[in-house]
Image (cartoon, rainbow, N blue to C red; front, side, top):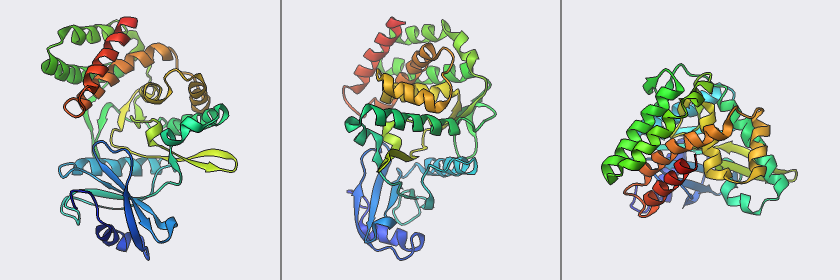
Length: 314
């Protein structure tokens, strides 16, 4: 693998056994992938185009996790995900772990949504609601971050899980910034709303990054249709409302049409959804702060300000 990414020759070698007869004519870096790199391998027959996802050299465990989650959801009847075509670890051709997958037809929702009519937006979000409900039908025995073989630091309740996540991420924030006021305000915010955690009945599979950048939409004569969802790196076992809250925070915000469509497709409006969304957003923002710290100047400070605003607003 070169510094600029995967070469066509490397892609052709990887496809040799996985996509019989494919003639590679080029390779393009895909948008997204803050940690991993995703490439579309272009073939003489566009129907044979595939996606090659390349991980950091020390991230073979993430590759194993994604394979495990993709297989799990397919075995549970969720078909709107890519088909896995091949994989290798750091000892493979690229010297880095990689996953070869089918390319879902269409483009990411965030690329096409700005030009959509209200009716199309509602339709796609209704489809998104139905899709994420399929994930939430897959139950787990405990709450926590998933790997390919286990739940890391399994917790018996949604409250224990979220307090554990907040403890880890807020401690990282405190050590880096010395801002004890925001640290203590966040913990007090959760403590004052502990009744909301009891509304979660059981832990289920969460995509945990279910936003427009990971939803693939195909334009058809009958309107936009979701062809699938990608990126299983962050999958978690937890309260299903956590997934909906992240979708709201990242992609819906103040758009009532998107929110109504999501709830229509999901089939139910969660009890106390507004308060629960805000509760989970506090935890999500600390996770985001930790992710962007040291990566993107200015963004962590903005996230911290958003946290202060959210907590102050109640």
